Image 1 (cartoon, one colour):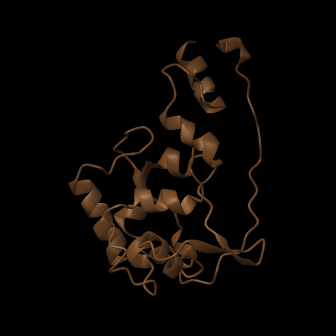
Image 2: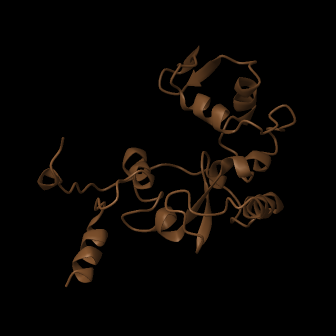
Image 3: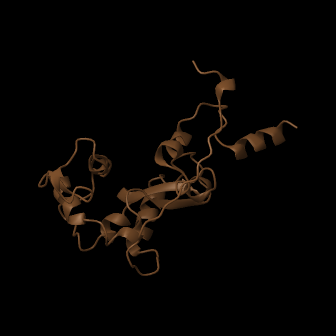
Length: 182
């Protein structure tokens, strides 16, 4: 069992250097607005990390809208419909079998109910802006420094929804804890 005194702070700087395809300025599509309405109607429009109902925003779970026209949605549809079992490897520059632990399997499993048969890859917004690609998050867990999905790596960010009561996750929480006890 790890002792509380063994807890230590890790500080890393996440740097991204990637290209986004050209795209129009982001506006909320009718599909995106309908998806938010549907989640609200079903009572599911609360932060997926902390359950907060205030300042909830929709995070594009699998694919950001800006990448809509850079993703091979025809391939994804083919995999979802069990028509394709290979993938293009950018690193190897050839077609390879889809690895058993490829993230495509998580996408397919977590989008059960999405109509991949009717999906038109030429209209990626019908998936990208659907409830199947939305993760409701409060402002802190979406874009907040030291907590936000856009600020931290997957394995670090994900733990926030599973922490034991009393565990201090980040320096801002430690500061708040000290302020409450002084």
